[in-house]
Length: 151
Image 1 (cartoon, rainbow, N blue to C red):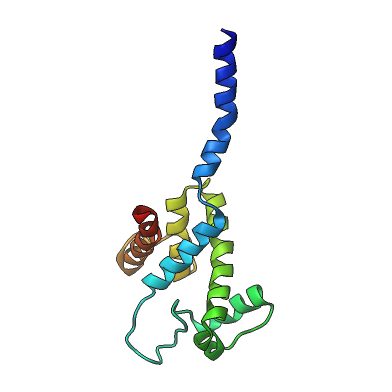
Image 2 (cartoon, rainbow, N blue to C red; image 1 turned 180 degrees about the vertical axis):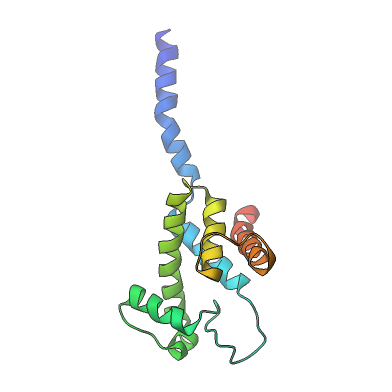
């Protein structure tokens, strides 16, 4: 009986470490989300479509994001022509939003990614249940999950 009880205690003691080891790190999740948003960005086919970088960010959005992330405003041209700055800003914003949604959904990764993708497109975490926005969210989720399937 003593050995059985010890085994249960050891097993229960290891359980939190096992669960924790299976959860991807926030950095891994953010990197996957940043890439999924890039890949799902609408392709307008126009050179001067009013959106900037591979993530298709609006200039007015870019101003507040660059101030938040870089502590300075970045011009649309600088954002467009400097992939490192673009990725740094997008990474920063995605980290803030995805982390918040992971907390809001009790670490439901699929729901957090979907809500973050909806926010990315509309500015709201909900309401992307039909039409173009629903298709976009599904596309982002598919790209987000793809690397995990192939590993």
